[in-house]
Image (cartoon, rainbow, N blue to C red; front, side):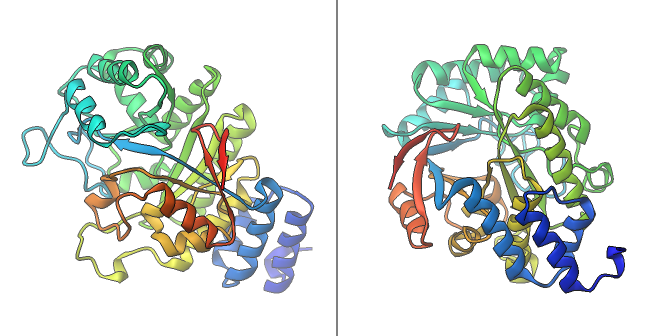
Length: 366
């Protein structure tokens, strides 16, 4: 039957049947779901898939975000964190200053350092290697999750090393996993329009492919809510799904909404709650080979994060301590949360909080 002329109810029923039978959704299915107004059915389907995979467990990690530098050669239109060399507010921490910052905020039980930052072309690749080495020497038991696929591409360019060699150098000094950033939207039309002066879609995917080949598990994001089309969002998910079919190396998918530029931004400048919930649910349905979809409270705010747990999300990220990139824009969320607050967030959404390590090994079920 030609699904193009199927009634909306019939089309949704066909998708529901696919989900019920564990069949993979097509690009057309994904676009249809985005265009549908039936948010609750989409949420129910995603919830069903998530309960099948994870039961009522919702994961979080005790982590700390670190930013070595905000100096960046790229001028991405959506970024309010970056600075030029010498610009007011620009900084590059020495490895010693990084340790000093960590010492102020560290407590036993912290399991992960989450490190991203600018593509700082005024320091050599060795600077980044030394910073990781120093961190690992001071905190040998904390997992280091550092440098997006775009940053690895940048290091390759400034060092003359291949992606594989860059990763191997960093793994030698303690790098354990890559965060998911730098993917933004995996579309060259989008990257050109948004002035994404960093890795192309293919380069980002290749970095993660190589990392997976070296035995590393990594993360994947999508930055939605600006100029991308719905088709580009779904295609982004399909690229990730295909790489996951090939390598099995992704731990989690993190959809992040673009934040407006100013703290004073009107509510009209934020991605809508409906789009946020739809995106969580649709990514859970499209990414059938990903174990987890994350509801990132920094991005969604606390109450929408709780709702997202009924729309397919099985992870709420972590304690963070002090988030800076979304908060350099107009994020409306807290900069971090305590463990108790995260446990409350999950429990009051009628789910089971599970403290995890970076690789989803369960530490404690609450």
